[in-house]
Image (cartoon, rainbow over all chains, first blue to last red; front, side):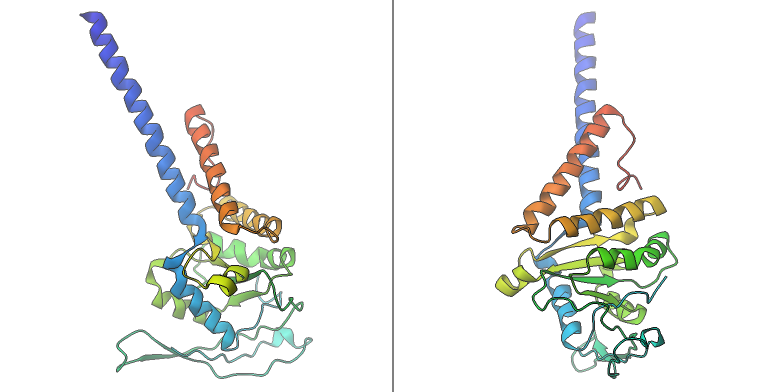
Length: 67
Length: 197
């Protein structure tokens, strides 16, 4: 009986540890993708807007304008 | 929407003069009641002549929050651009950046943002699919994180200028970072410097 309880407890603890690890990895992946990721169709409007700015006269940065 | 630029930056007097233009932004609202904003953007003249058919176009959006990331960007901007000088880089002034973020509200607080357009993809397939990459530098809350992020991004651009499939490279990089994070979680090592905010 006692051994069964030990088995159950250790099984639950293992499952919890695995679930936490998966959750933590997922959180890190999300955070990382939030910081850096590809531009896709959801960003199309902003991308077109930026290209429009160039067509309307935005020129490349020359350096030494800030800091 | 219409944006014109008025340019007047004395810091570029030693370079070729750039003709001034008037800037008007009309954005948001219903078509019958357009909102109009006057925007003056600083003159940006050419530091180097980027090739006509550059692989990338780099845009920097910065509304100049009083943040660590914004300060780190401004302090290291010239080095970042020097490292990627083959690519035309467009620094959007504060007013243009604010006008843009008023349209794209979800980006507020994430700037400075560095957006890279893969012109090879945009010329071939437009902007509907994967067509570049972006870095939300404003999400990095410490100086070390912001500087590391900027350095990583500069290195990534530099090393992948000639790559055929930028999307695969970005996703591979993210996967590697994710795996490194997983190893750190399992091993109990210190957290990844970029995502420990």
